[in-house]
Length: 245
Image 1 (tube, rainbow, N blue to C red):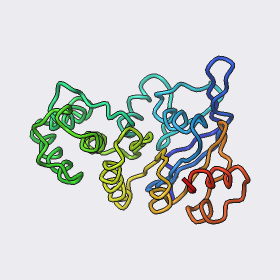
Image 2: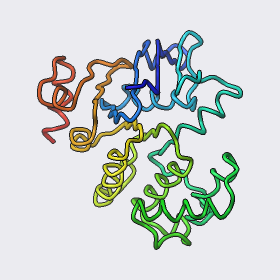
Image 3: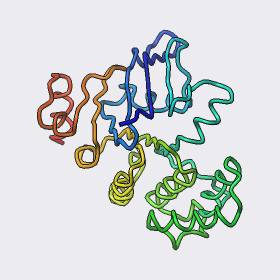
């Protein structure tokens, strides 16, 4: 399996507070990786470093498809290949659903209006909300807005999709509809890195689960290894706490 994301000695600090302590991680092309762990363990910071939404220390190295992630021309290349879905949707409120999806391919990839529209229609069907094309974000439920955000990320045909707790801002009854879309996506061969509190999703969909705590990767393995036979006491304690709720 070709490595598409290569992270070496990733360190991140806010002043004296070190958030990430020298993370090493390789992600294969087409792999679905779920990152789990307690709040404050560095999960979101880790994935935000992949497309340089967070800066990191000079001795760290992050590469996406062989391109070094660093300020300058390389960064535009990386961001064209890496889609991101945030917990708070981040849609443009003044644009319709259709235009939210069309804008990036037209501006970044110089896609024609007709082609961008065709792709947007196809993606809205794929995430199950074709009928919402002409509405504005405020007219949609949280679950629908998150599905638009996924369609918008897919419109750039990214090599890697990052999800930063994509269901944590949703009402409980809307979580399922977003996870269903992500399950379908996971079967299409796109590389996905998902920070999530949804253990059932991680167990069912991930090729690999990474457990983080205190800015370090404590344990990584298949869902079966992590959920059924975790080796580390810290992993066992975390899973006991979250799975017994």
